[in-house]
Length: 112
Image (cartoon, rainbow, N blue to C red; front, side, top):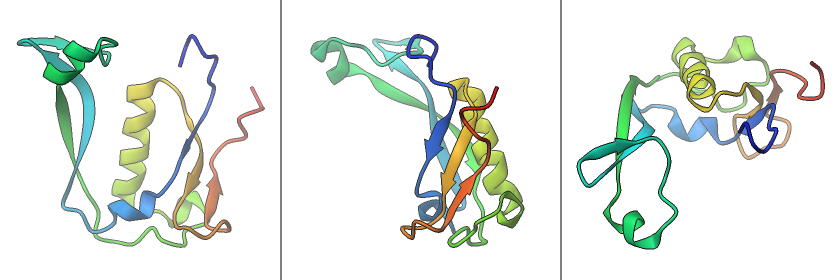
């Protein structure tokens, strides 16, 4: 994120998480018994690496078709905010179904 100058994320397919009791978010990796923060670049290490998950509460309500931030369930908003914290950049665009109109512009990525 820092090296590439990314200042916003497009988070798509939020609706596929609807109805899940819990959602696992990968927050790091374990390699040979040690926790690391980045996915290793070498193929031998990649074969031995295991994801480390943080589990958050899911939501039963639907996000499909939501076109405004206020239309999202509270737990979906918490999920989006946690993703932002973990990656270090804001979610600027959020899609809630395969329909192009079901997109929320959370924040204009070109504004400071």
